[in-house]
Amino acid sequence: EAKSSAVASSQIIHSDGGEMEPETMEIKSVSEYFTKMHLGSVC
Amino acid sequence: MAQSAANGVDQDLASKRLHSRMEASCLELALEGERLCKAGDFKGGTAFFEAAVQVGTEDLKTLSAIYSQLGNAYFYLKEYGKALEYHKHDLTLARTIGDRIGEGKASGNLGNTLKVLGRFDEAVVCCQRHLDISQEQGDKVGEARALYNIGNVFHAQGKQQLWGCTQDPGDLPLDVRDTLQRATGFYEMNLCLVKELGDRAAQGRAYGNLGNTHYLLGNFVEAIKFHRQRLSIAKEFGDKAAERRAYSNLGNALIFLGQFNTATEYYRKTLQLSRQLRDQVMEAQACYSLGNTYTLLQQYERAIDYHLKHLYIAQELTDRVGEGRACWSLGNAYVSLQNHKQALHYARKHLDISKEIGDRNGELTARM
Image: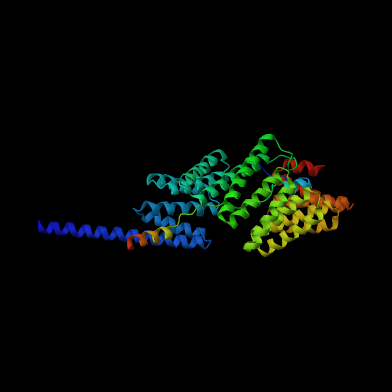
């Protein structure tokens, strides 16, 4: 829905409902996996 | 006969060498992609990861990590269609190799991506699977993150349900209230767990979002309590972006408690931090909030000052909706000062912009 430019002051403040905290994405690291594999083969 | 056997061995060796070179090359490309993404260069990172996929690898766990990071990079680049595609590949691969933790992680990432695409029901299913697998594997960190992500999905859904509603926070339709209460419940479970794990950064995120859901539910005192805790952790980490968010959210909640003067103090800190962070969009938002708050305080000259600042930034950013809002607010402030000439000037500008962007509501209001 398009945002309107005509809104009452209190609603303007409210319009976005506050700023959310960022998402947390799960990480699968190639370097960590490689290091583990390498250590595994050395041991 | 002996010659042909020797040829066969040579070919076998050459093929093994090529294979091992390709594996090494894929790994090198992936490691460079990872390095670039860690440095925040997601565009460069995707190029290397995609080249790594082209070269290929027989190590399916490496391939899963590449798909996962490609999905995340596209997520941060806001190319959600591609992010979705890679997280799906990762999920399929993790299942194929029987990597349960990997399956949980892929599900979580898929859930986050579906959430930003507004596909909330599917997002909940994915995040719930992340939660189930984490619990099954005794992975407390994963469990906490999954709880946070489910909270996020309900939170975003609640906000979307609110779009177009003209009510004040707290004055909510039942289904919206229910969605936001669910979000709050998951954030509370997340907070409990991250406290147990001693993860302060995660506590900060939980406090911030709890502040936001309580704000939307109309529990302003509670919201302020949580945002203050968020602010304190942001300062502890020197996280300026989180600090700015907390000040802005605190200002918004204080408005609804009628504490306009304190709200202006927080908005000023928001403005200062936005400038420090060179975030023009947030700078414009802070000016706008300040303009509106001074209007509520009936300090119209100051309100005009901030609305003009907002207008200039909106023009610089070619944000026509923002420009329209600034003109509308300026028109109102000049009416209050009985400066009819300026009021008419901005009302006309507001009307022109509303027509141009097809904002029917804005157009009707401007005509009045």
